[in-house]
Amino acid sequence: DARTPFRFVLGVIPMGRQSSAYGFSQALDGTWDSYRKATGRRSAKRNKIRDASDFMGWYMNESLEKNGISLSDAKNQYLAYHEGRTGYARGSYKRKSWLLRVAEEVDTRAITYDQQLRNCRGYRY
Image (cartoon, rainbow, N blue to C red; front, side, top):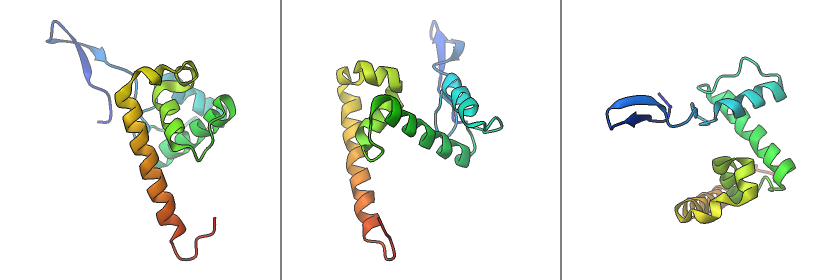
């Protein structure tokens, strides 16, 4: 079950989940609904890897259009994905040193993957 943990009142009474994030993409309900409406993929499911991957591509393209984040800028795409495009635009990530550290790790991994891909036989950039 790829859902966020429950919140508890008084430490024992379940009070719903911490967010509506679900599935491979951990997309929130409202954002997932926007994706399905914008793409016409009304039957897309968050727990299907193909749909979740398409969602992530859609979200990154939206971040390019609305926030000017290059598709090859893994660090800032990650920050926009984590904080939401509005949170990213406000700079909410700047107060989260742990998140900036993780974003750097994502960027380092993206560079490694890019180098590996460029070394693949038959690969054309």
